[in-house]
Image (cartoon, rainbow, N blue to C red):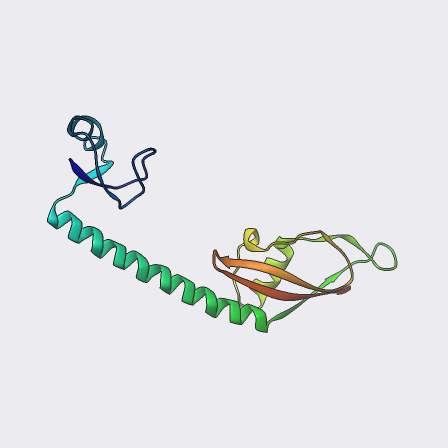
Length: 147
């Protein structure tokens, strides 16, 4: 029996695939559990329309991410911190600090998207990567200065 997968099923296929499965398996398990549709012409047409909509929304998300990248890269953030010693910070700069500074400049970025490889514990200029979208990464310039 030909069916269209609604979800990824191990050893059968991925979401949206049209596959052949045993009639009994489809009638007794896959269809009652809502894991598949029958592969009728109407359902195949719906699947194609859904794929087109999904592709269009992915393109739109990527375009918005590219616009956000341009906005982020045009910014420069200054973070003032107290000093512990001559060139050392009291504490360190975290993704939450950078996120707050970006929010103050009008750009809302989740702190989980800011990727700091090593803790920032000294004064200076840093370029920090921000993963906006799986395919788009921006770099923001951070100036860490004495308070």
